Length: 275
Ligand code: PEP
Ligand code: MN
View (cartoon, rainbow, N blue to C red):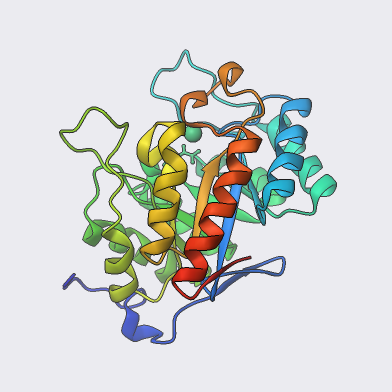
């Protein structure tokens, strides 16, 4: 279907499928992994309360951005090194492994020092020098689909990371730009079976950026798991109305916990379980 030169990412390169293990959490096995936390690290209180809430609600990994790619330079762009420190603190408090974005190769040593998984954001999917750097790091990488990238372009970007010597790679569909303005992006759930068919890599879905509406997130989280997603990346904030980024698509802890229970039933119906 995607007849590019996919030497390392193609399903044929590892027909049984890749499992990426992060501090004992296995991504790509039978169990569906839930990664949750705020869009951005904002303060110690905000990060720790969100971390404890997502752990209580059923998450097995923690997310939070210390370096935020924002459309406007005047928006909150993250706490940088202080954000990384707070992520390490949240991991120490909860035991949850940390996923955080690296926006620039110059930040990689500091981010790699704290992160358990390096996230490459949608806007950097084709930052080829950054892809090679995270490839050389050998650390687990979560590569998000570019907002205007075809699946072929996406897998060629993934190929850059693997070609640099890194097999610890996780894919994540996060919505693509279409002509439909009622959602922030159009969540392309057909990407899940297509990526599973064409590659051996674990495939996550991010229904938060994929929809831009908190109320729609639980429904599309369920749909993603029904479509075979190996995990979810979900934004959660204890007070979404005060969030410094993406409050509109952030779930409260209560709604998050309800979503996990709903997704648990869907997972069981398709022969999976929630980790
Ligand atoms: C994020 O997950 O924090 C993020 C910025 O998402 P994306 O790169 O998909 O826009
Ligand atoms: Mn966000």
